[in-house]
Image (cartoon, rainbow, N blue to C red):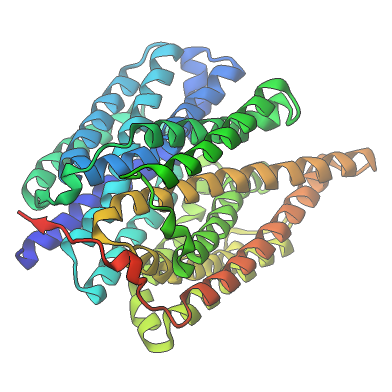
Length: 475
């Protein structure tokens, strides 16, 4: 495969990643405009945000397996086409039902696309060094999307009709589909002759659906309410059955041997802690910037741009640093640096300025970016024929971790805020009390993730049982 074609394949999957990641958070700051135009109730408002995430997180594992079986390029094109058409429908939506349905279909498309992106990178970059650099670029694009989402949402909601937050996906998505058909090689392997493992796909989707729903709705409905307890019970039952089915199925969706591999299991643990800290602080820091410091939506989005740029820079440089000091030291120290940045945000208060935010945000950005070797090492331990489902596990873990971060930090924030209000503190002081406690918990967990990354990546050697899988033949 020509070097130029490999570069364009990377550009293509990075663009797709950018679009699907942006749609995770671009809607948040445009919610007031959408609510005003469509007359949404609070419940409808929540589902505009949640429908995408619910469908996305629930189907990531299924999307990874479908990519391994049906072909990565084929599923990439199908998923991106679904996502693009759903974006057009969302932008044209004139009522809440159409908008929520379109958002859910966007999530389905994103769940088909996202696992294929890392799998395609693994496919077209067989050289370990080049693959690590490519994953660094892919991760950098994801980091930029975290910042650009709120910024774009703020700019569009203030200066254009809110529908444009979805319309911008249409020309980019169409161009990316065309580029993907040219740049991404068709894949053919023994994986194409494998069964779909329908029970595994259904059980994984049901389990993730129940867990995601419970985490999204738990705070509002009450953690002990019947719907939430049912969601958790459904998730637990589905995951138990999933494990049993995968152990006995001739051609399982997920080879349970993956979880006996130290790098894979330790790396996934670290990724969960990474996602918990980053997404949790991102969500509640947005509330802090607008509710306490009085930033506009655009100003709040812009505040995260330096963090994202540093994260992107760190992701690009991560492979060089890990080559010098070892991936275990690089990823472990990076997450400790990120934890220190999160903890330092607790020193900020009501009178903080834009500049006073930057040292903390810089630590978080650099630490988050330099954690990229973790991703490369996890994917690198997988047989190529299972790269799609491994990518699905990776992305599902990160999405669920993000929801856990928002849920747990939110519960801590509300609990401490309520106690402070009852003690006679002001609303702002009470919010800051809960916010700071949430940050402390997030920092501790991210630091624990750094320790997990250190031990997971130390003295890494290939897993012989996994390495025995045949590789794909690129057409």
